[in-house]
Amino acid sequence: GQNIDQPTEMTATEGAIVQINCTYQTSGFNGLFWYQQHAGEAPTFLSYNVLDGLEEKGRFSSFLSRSKGYSYLLLKELQMKDSASYLCAATDYNQGGKLIFGQGTELSVKP
Amino acid sequence: SAVISQKPSRDICQRGTSLTIQCQVDSQVTMMFWYRQQPGQSLTLIATANQGSEATYESGFVIDKFPISRPNLTFSTLTVSNMSPEDSSIYLCSGESQGGGNYGYTFGSGTRLTVV
Image (cartoon, rainbow over all chains, first blue to last red; front, side, top):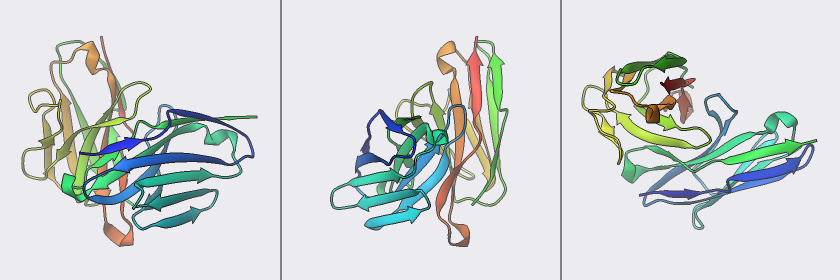
């Protein structure tokens, strides 16, 4: 099976940088996703990593280390609108391509 | 990436009744999934909707309670049967798309179900 862990909540200040960590265990790793979810809305795609390294996309970057089973999402120049739940999810080719989610990290950005 | 239309967006239902949720994708997707998200929690996978055959259910979910159909590559339904207040949750469908050089999972807007 799969096991995905991330902190349940974090707090950061507007304009700052925050790093949300995620560790995962899968038998047949096939990619890691980060999603953002605002209250009452569906998750929206942020990033996808399948190879080691850093993927940068504007204020958001995502990092993957397959040997360590570790990923992080880096948010720069935080804005109030970044207050949301951030979901780490992994796919496993031994599990038929299912996307399995961690418990989500509730990020609060304060002035 | 694919766009998924999900309906209804919300409903309030009487216990003992059933509700069918529909998802329509604007392009063919290889796989479709149904999730449940209870208040304050993350997404829990209910089942994989298989085109033209029975869905594959996760542990804790059964076909009699959550029958699923997927008659083609762009449409799927989830029925929540014989509902009880414990079924109050948000239900989301998702599609895996690999077209156009983009790979990802897109979600419908969700169905907020309240059982009274």
